[in-house]
Image 1 (tube, rainbow, N blue to C red):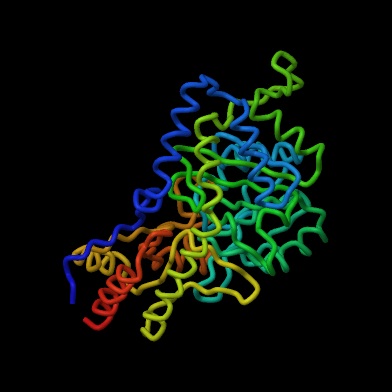
Image 2: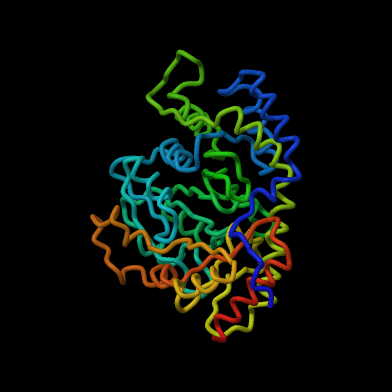
Length: 374
């Protein structure tokens, strides 16, 4: 048994190594151009991402959080409205709702082990006359059950926003997530499947009028330099980020396939361990494994055991949002969202990146087997 192998949680340097020269040339080109805000690089990236998604238009923004906010505001969501989202997600999802002036309403996750997305039944139970929208998160790269969620939302005349921060390139029946709802937001945080070199995001919408408003909000409420139709904000993707993303975008499909292959290695080596919950993958979906999340009986003990043997792990996420101090005012103590709370107590993210090797996965699995047999 090799106890000296070190397996990083994410190895961005190794993943980006083949693109080092074009990335350096591109960065130098932007610096030499002195076009740092807007310009041809931003327009080029928006066009290429739209083509990749198969949509008419994409608006690049400063981060996914502001992208969700921009989508909500452009769809007319604001004070007095309620927006439902999953209680098991990163706080930017719910922050964007509060930023819009609407009230956050949480729902639980699916009860099936290894599934971490919104429970369609609990979503429907949470709808009230004030509910105006739902933000559906495709968590961990796993597509949510849109085939159930969308009909419920349409029946109640709700706007649908997809949070694709962790899921760019995931699919349902061959159709890419981010193209199902009224709008969608994406993240280019460095560790994401399409990672940039700082913060960054994008928004898309089906309605051209909504898309026009989406373009204006992050640019101070304007399309022309001195013609502000309303107050907006400053959340533009800078030209350097856009240029670098144009270099990495063509690799996204191959990177997602590599993640999926690594997940298959994990499954083959871990599938028969009692007490270990593996991520579930539906037959109709392509899971892009932003992270490979398992559930273990004692997370802290397991993580420490693996760390001693050179395996880095992460936790996504240790606390359901109803238990965060930021949402104490909602008066939703432990027990309100049992499936999410149970998952948050036990989830552990194993090393995952497009460049992880079969040998590294085998080492992780060997150490995990040792933990369960100890």
